[in-house]
Image 1: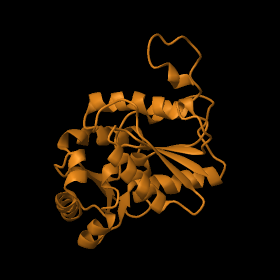
Image 2: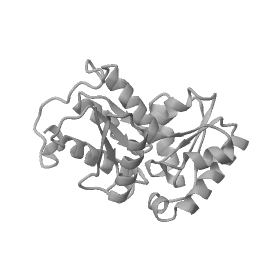
Image 3: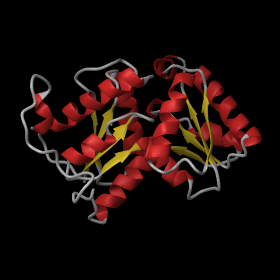
Image 4: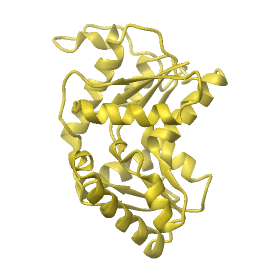
Amino acid sequence: MKILVVNVNTTAAITDAIAHHARASASPGTEIVGLTPHFGAESVEGNFESYLAAIAVMQRVMSYDEPYDAVIQAGYGEHGREGLQELLHVPVVDITEAAASMAMLLGHRYSVVTTLDRTVPLIEDRLKLAGLDTRCASVRASGMPVLELERDPQRAIEAVVAQAEIAVRNDHAEVICLGCGGMAGLDAKIRERTGVPVVDGVSAAVALAESLVRLGLSTSKVRTYAPPRRKQIVGWPQALFG
């Protein structure tokens, strides 16, 4: 089994970290391939960058010319999953939805701890669109920019743990979701401090993608995610359709 794990930003170090964590979560025999978009922002922390990333991720996947069995979009709260589902005939798993779906199997209500406050509405909207918002106790911002998660991991741990503790104490969350692909690997520290299950979206997405492939299941193509109609696309990027 081969799974593509696509970072939504252009920082190769973050792609490498996400892919490393995905490999640690994968079953024996599953090959993880990390992909970095060819264009876009070095970190995705707002609507403009997220919409840009959606196009970049689709272009990057469609330009990959080897066989694969599933795709994971490794951006929390980002746009583009629906477009990938139209373009591809293999399962597509978004880490936001994977984490929330897994969290709801573990407790009555969950909270998400993410990076900057400006990303909170994007995550809330993504959860609402996916029908996963009714059991979300809160989405809390750690105040840590995406790139700082790599540059200052100790400060990142403290900032994320502090918000997780507040979510459990004040918001009555019973499960914590890590609200950024770059937070992969912080789950153990948060679990130690809060005493609740912690779901990392990358690990959850790998588990769900593997399960879908093994069950022989993929996106329905009869209506919402039917392949795009063939038509002329003027200018850029032609590679979306291969």
